[in-house]
Image (cartoon, rainbow, N blue to C red):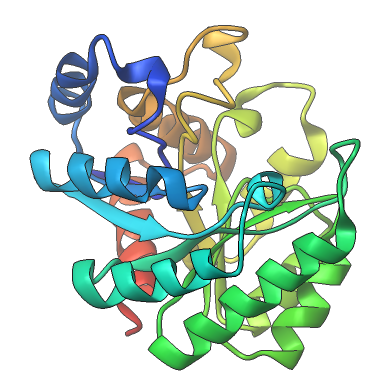
Length: 253
């Protein structure tokens, strides 16, 4: 069985066929899905999805691309829903230095505040990191959390090793399936297997065979098969190890 450690199942792209999407995932062997929030406005949607579908687990946080409409009281709302819903992680949080018209200081404020909440609650974090790996690592060294997952990892081997030292797993998904994604594929093939988890980021980051189309969690086993091929392992072993890795970091064990 597989676990999708990052899937936006609450997204509007699934509103017309969410039941079918979940059924297809279960039929494909994806037994558990982590559903991260991106802003206070969708905390309720994430909670609703995770109540409706067994095997779905919530994470709550303010995404760096959604800090512009955020207010400081949203951090209070985050603390409240953590206490009420008992999520598996805080996320999706982090820094994004790729988008234009951004406010770096505002991103830093909400990222640090949420790391402090994670530290205080003992929850792992789901990280969004784009062109900001070293900055994120700096904050993780200053505000120590129990660990988490660096979602859609796309850094160097040295940066990967630094995340691992801090108790993080590295998320690999659709990007790994593209033959020209040499750096990501090399990392997937050579990093310690115990540091790797799998994800779809559905409806985003589709794999090579769905390029340009909507991604969905039922694609995870085929993504896992790509990892198995890169590492010269059986698909069953990849499923078992990556699932164990995910729950090791998400459960804090």
